[in-house]
Amino acid sequence: MALVVNEIFRSIQGESTYSGCLCTFVRLTGCNLRCSYCDTAYAYEQGEQMTIQEVLEGVKQYGTHLVEVTGGEPLLQDETPRLAQALLMAGHQVLVETNGSLDVEVLPEGVVRVVDIKCPGSGMSERMLWENFQHLRPTDQVKFVITDRHDYDWAKDVAARYGLPGQVTVLFSPAFERLRPEELANWVVHDNLPVRFQVQLHKVVWGPAAEGV
Image (cartoon, rainbow, N blue to C red; front, side, top):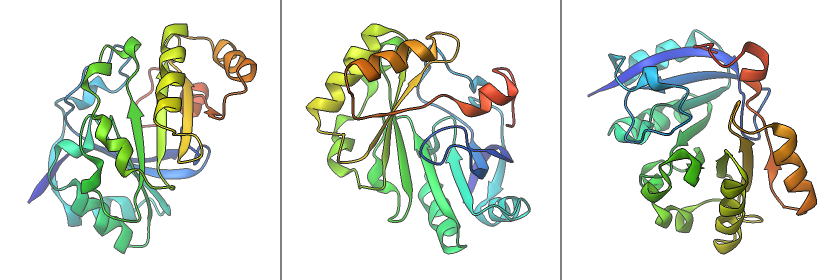
């Protein structure tokens, strides 16, 4: 069985608690959502078929311990859990970033699941699989991309209602070029919110249009 892979590349991890670390990214093709601020629309269709072994060889050439499987939406492909397991067995620290609309339980133990909960500003908040919150592990991370004050209040309510702070790392990120980082930071500070503020570090370094970074 094969995966459809958009790209494999080494860069600086731009988000999550691993921000700033060297990381090899495996970007899989296809997504079931169409977020208003999507920055990887090129991964909706473009890609080539690769076996798990071919992906492992592609990752190996970059020599990083940290590997992230992303998309698109990686859980759309049936082989993604097997790929994650193979990466773990090869000795990697493995992150899988998923858009929150599909069952995260399919991923093996040892994977750090970064679940991106879509706020109303994304246009996709009604597509979330809320049952995923019942299956989070302490090593998992939940990310909210915030476009405006309404998104912020919505995300704050969701985090509190499901008791996310203290259970997992909660990440609040301003949507690039839609919400000024200082605005979101000020709201978090004012509310004494127990979340981790982050910016998309790779975009700060290389700009919003860069691919493969």
